[in-house]
Length: 240
Image (tube, rainbow, N blue to C red; front, side, top):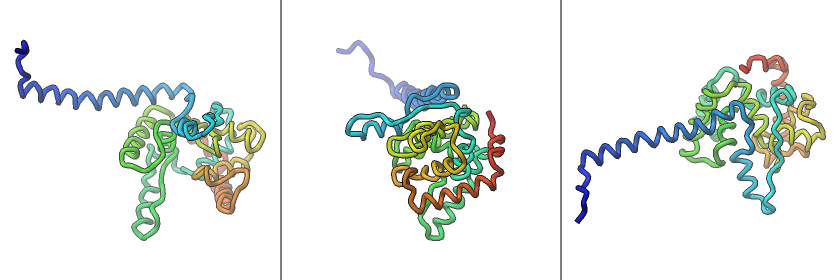
């Protein structure tokens, strides 16, 4: 015979409510522990780099060398903003203008295109996995909010420049500059920067070293946008 009386219904409900409250709090604390230290520390790797490592038959890690924002050409920072997220300095992680344009185009029969900001891309590349699912998009949105709350705009851009994939097994501005142009990232000129930014939508399909017509067109567009934004002085709008 048991020495313990069976748990009452009210007590069970209290335990369930406590558990339901504790789980979101634990998730919040865990995600803060993942995001907040990276305000100051350089990441050793990212979720996308780990995926590349797991897919490699030889088990090789991709090329990746972190360098600080000051060691990356301002031309590349400008090119990435010009090509991917021109309202980066103004929005809080989500570009509602681009989202509305994408939805409007889809309503008119066009294929739904992405409207991800640099902040969203950092959240995805650093912490998540590729693919399309509601769970992944919800986590991406949550991490985007945390990143915007915990990091400066310049830190977010620094992360993106260092974590973005520029080619097969090539992550970050320094590795890309050395591989494709034989020079450090701080020495990239406007043309080289525009070429690197042009492949970012799909670095597995688009190649820096063998640009197809799409890459050439994107490169010219980015160069035009860089001039329209007023050159590297545009970067002064980013908070440190």
